[in-house]
Image 1 (tube, rainbow, N blue to C red):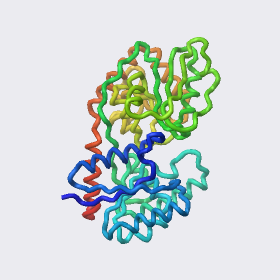
Image 2 (cartoon, rainbow, N blue to C red):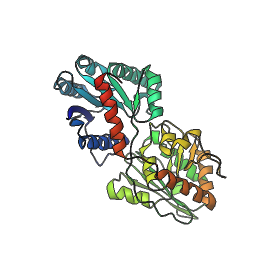
Image 3 (tube, rainbow, N blue to C red):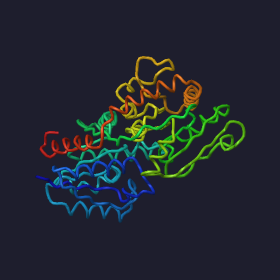
Image 4 (cartoon, one colour):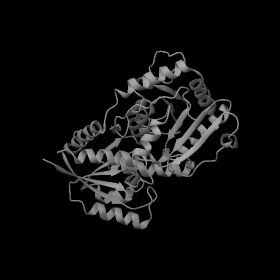
Length: 366
């Protein structure tokens, strides 16, 4: 027997021109839940400039919530819910509100301390109204729980679709970064690191929507061994698959992440990963990744690449130099990436975990 699950999403969750990890997570999980017998998923899109909506968007969300029957379970994307506790408060007593936090609002980069504190206070009010809170990694769940003094925050990690392994090039010179072009993803740090590698042959493709960051002049020159820096824009479907297939190493120097879905996507293609040790990134790399990076000789932790401290373009450049100049290291990391690929779980497992969490919340046992 299927039970109704009302879901409130930001408007544009399926917009191919502006993909995001949160939107892709929502769509993949809801499609899986819809295909199961446990829930009858009923989606509603909430237009607005979340998490800073205008009056019309607030009124629209209030009308959406008012339309749900008493006792209904309502799963809200945190981008919509976390900044407007005053809209949720009138409905919290009669609805079973569940908030899915992709990224705590105050963890976004570029905020002033006052803005971050204001968003954190709003989010705290929202999450204390909820019957349940879900995050997208174990580390993110612990972080949200500690930040907002919550007794329990559940975790439902993203899944990934298995893909054909990419074919490595002899020199491993094809670097790939897939992420929205925002300061939080650290593309500027990667560009800085690449300026230190002008004596080597490489090419780097950036995939993602957003404003292209300033490219240092030395990286746009065609002289010497510099091959290319290319911004491909937002890609999806076959075009995104082609970008992964035409890469040797995946690089994600984020300043903050809750999980890093693109990391498991890269691993699904057998690509080693160099990333910053933030949020749930070690989980995405695999349990071995929790202990940090690995040395060039192999070490004792089978990390399929390397984890670095954030905000360190010098260390990133040194790691990329090691990759580009050490054939044994490339072979080691590729073997580990292929091994990690075999352990990746699909979106069906994420949906199974989400179903388990929602049932416990409905039963009051969460």
